[in-house]
Length: 293
Image (tube, rainbow, N blue to C red; front, top):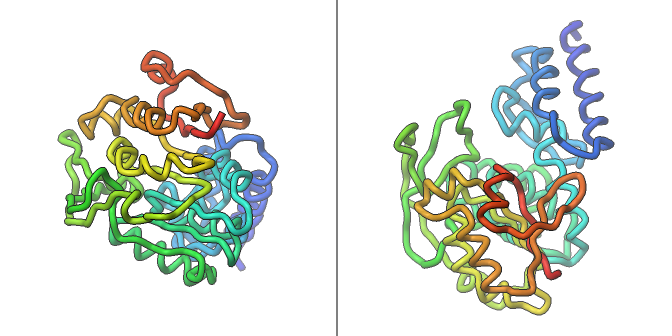
């Protein structure tokens, strides 16, 4: 083993240990980039074992793969999902990408639980399916090739290249006129209420690159369960505007469907907020938790 490989392995071990004890993932990407510089080129694309024990085939040269490899991807959201889910629970992962949160949830709900993972982008979905097989989790995860929306039908999904603004997790139902998609394909769309009729999920995660407002309109029935599911979702004003809606539209739709919800910003500690347009404009891009107050 070369000196470079030894140095990288030692730094990677330290970073995975850090991910287990740090209260927040803030600054984690900067640390990952520093460790990545030590990696021999032959190790950039290979199978990694995360601090959660998941085996993932990742490319350290890209985001979010590099943060997933060391357990620093959206760290506080990952920990929240672990706290919310129990054995035998049901989670819906809308925008599952390559399966990081899907598999984390599958670990939590156990063999008697269930995860429904929606990933319409074919390349990401292929990686998701491969990771489920690699980790022996196909028995508890159902993979859906559809995009969550407010109606059943079809839509165009846009692929963006790996740039400072986009990565493979940025595939969206909406194009960007300033940085056009490099590829497009037609995918089915579904209403969650119809597609998962009769389900009672404990947790729904939405990361839909601007389509959150449409998905919220298609899941109002599930939100009225007793108790209602918790919802973890990304707030990104730029993605919402690309979809042609106000940034707070999906928040308003979730709260209208389930008035019992309170809203919290996900961080090292949960911070409850009044999600007015003025307050949300100050927050920038954050992950939010909706749950019965």
